[in-house]
Amino acid sequence: MYTPIALNKTMLVSGLLLAACAMPAHATSVVDAYVGGNDHGRGDVIGALADFNIMAMDVSVSGSILTVSINTNFAGKGDDLLFASLSNSLGIGYGDLFLSSSWNPSGAAPYSADNYSNGTVWRYGFSLDNRYMNEDSAGTGTLYSLNSGNNAVDTLISDSFMTGGVYRNGQEVAVNTNSNGVTSVNSGTWDINVADKTVNFYLDLTGTSLLGSDIAVHWGMTCANDVIEGVVPAVPVPAAVWLFGSGLLGLVAVARRKID
Image 1 (cartoon, rainbow, N blue to C red):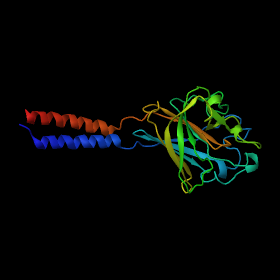
Image 2: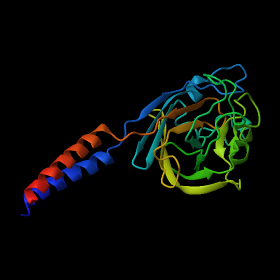
Image 3: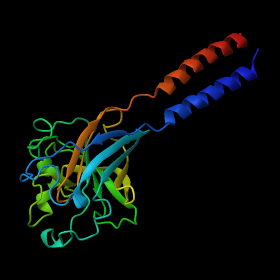
Image 4: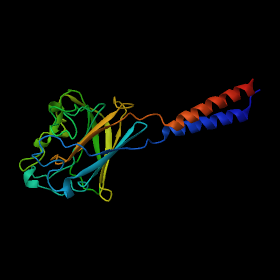
């Protein structure tokens, strides 16, 4: 006979399983251990630590949504017109976010010779609609697929934004939206939390090859006085999902015996 109680239990466990699948992944933290090439002997940070230092980034994926949170003293300074006379009168702005499914920096840590020409080929870039945004606002942007397989074609480097002074040359800081090799994938948002010293990006990875893969990340301000790069492993299925799945299979077996 049909047993409503067994069916209800099955539905309950199914709901719990779906809830477990929807649970956000724990963020993976990457400490800034990347220097990058052309540092002019200044090391990890060129200029004042209070302005440019990047400490770490947290990367997480929940469903198809990627969240990248950059912990940096530069949070809140993109509208301050820092060094405007050396940067096309616009000051130092927030750089775009670059992504790939593999990380291949040149050399060994701290990668002091790595730059756009010899390092990781970035496959996606999140282009900011307003890189000089006031910290009291929320920003938007477009996620582009970088199809040329050549950073020199699909990205703009720090030299494109600076007109003088000492800065880290040759680092990717923006998507070249005029390149024939870039195509838009979808949109995203970003914001600044001055209290937490974070610049935060929220992207939908639907339509990209990054879902279920390792994710390499690159970010720096437009002068690239500090840059962070690193890779986080593919997000595994949470253990809770397997536990719920095992329980569900057992309950279904019980329900079938009662139905029989």
